[in-house]
Length: 346
Image (cartoon, rainbow, N blue to C red; front, side):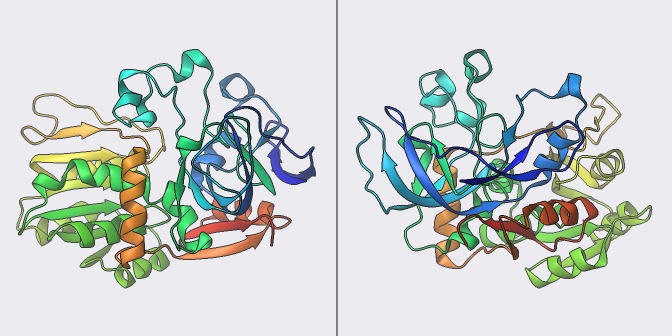
């Protein structure tokens, strides 16, 4: 079968031919209908040799949907042909966090060598992929595969971050979304669907700001040196009750700190690698700063339900598997408007 693999440190990903996978006991073979392209992949491929935690070659793709092609021995509850989404942050299934459904925070995954698809395990950018356990599959129940696949990360990750801050996003509150790209434009929709808060989107690109306006942002502000002052002015000097930074770079975390109000939540979701100092006098009183990761299986089910209701949708551009390297080039250049989706089987 064809697969998109990262094969050489510092090189572009390549479309190659690899053996067809076969499911072992307890596993599920999926025929992949859609796979999402993510900045996390670019971050992985930017790491030097001594900082890459995954073995190469690596089949990319941690967002995936497909149809069940074959079942390994002992698998029940699924049938061939079922349309499903892949829950990506695989865990051990037995530790305290996994017992809560929080496999994204599995306590034993590192020790056991359990890695998500596309982030250590063979991913979804292939004609077929192996899913380690049927519990990591969620029914699509009529959702279009292209529309659904970004929701497994670009929907689930902001949903998880926003859900934690719902008590602070009451009527009259303000939420700030920094970075209106793949995750950020979904976050705007989630905030509009789940809260009465006023939503202010920030980005450095006008096309991203236009996308934010189109999907419901009340205000869209250019993310420059004047952005924090503009947000403060829009909030009567009080700042926002919740700030979601989907970039995580030095300028954006500084902006997040500057626009947060007293008792605000700051969620640094982006993987830009910047740190935000926390201490008395460094931030407004009782500001809470978190770095959330992905989301729970239950939350993925909730995100897909929101999509079925029409409350959230993802702006997508589609590419063939052969053109997947071009999708990564455009993502790296910042010219993907929304989310790029690969169609491995046409």
